[in-house]
Length: 275
Image 1: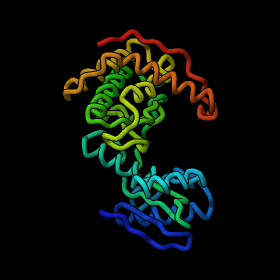
Image 2: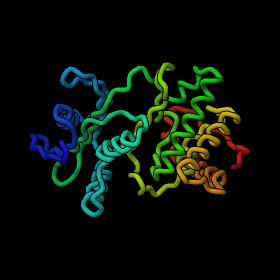
Image 3: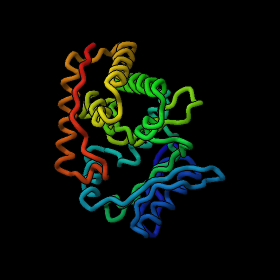
Image 4: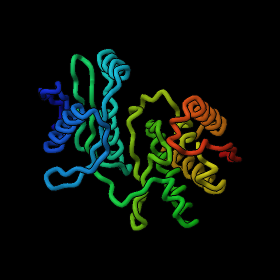
C-alpha cells in the first residue's frame, strides 16, 4: 500500500499506511486500543509471521496539538513519522526494524489513537544492558560502531533526537553489525530543530556510568572520522555544544524527575577530547 487509506470503523476513521496484512492488524489494534483505553507494546502474529506492535491513546492536549500541526504544517503524527523514518534509515543501510504499517484513529476531528507495526528484533538487549555484560574488546567495538553510525547519520542530516542507550538495541555477538536504531520518531531527515550535539548529549547523559573515558574517546574518534569520510567535518566547538545540551537534558530531568523512570539522576560529566 503506497498512499494512506481511510477506513471507517465504529470507533472512528482510521487512516492507515503500510503493507496488506499488517495494515489490517494496525487498524484492529487502533480500534481495540481505543475501546480498552490502553497503551501496549507486544508481539503479534500476521500471516504466520511474528511482528511487534506498539500503540497508545493521545491525551486531549496532545491530540489538539497534533491535529493543528497536521492541518497547518501537514506534519505526520509520531507513529506515522516513525514509520517513514525507519524506512529512510533502512534505505541508507542503517540497521533499524522494518516498519510494516502505521495507523491513526480519528474521531470528531482529533487523533485519538496511534499504532505502529514493525519487525520484531529477536534476541536483542538494550545498549545499557549489553554494555554491562560485554568484555572490554566488545565494549570498544560497540563504541566504535556507534560513533561511526551516528557520524554517518549526522552527515546525512538526520538527528535522531532520542538517542539514549535504552533506544539502541544490540543483537547477538555473531552479527557483523550489532547496533539497531529504534524509536526514531522525533524528527524528519534534514528538518530537525536540534543539532548533532543533541544526539551526542543523549548518548553521554549517562556517560560516566556507561562508558570509560577511553571508550568515550573511541566513540568520538569514530564519529569524527565517519563524518569526515562523508565530507562533513565536526564543529570546532563540538564538546562545548555537547556539554550545553547535556545540561539542558539534566535541567529537564530535575524539573520532571518522573522522566527518569526509576533510574538514578546522571552524575557529572567532563571529557577531554579534541579533533
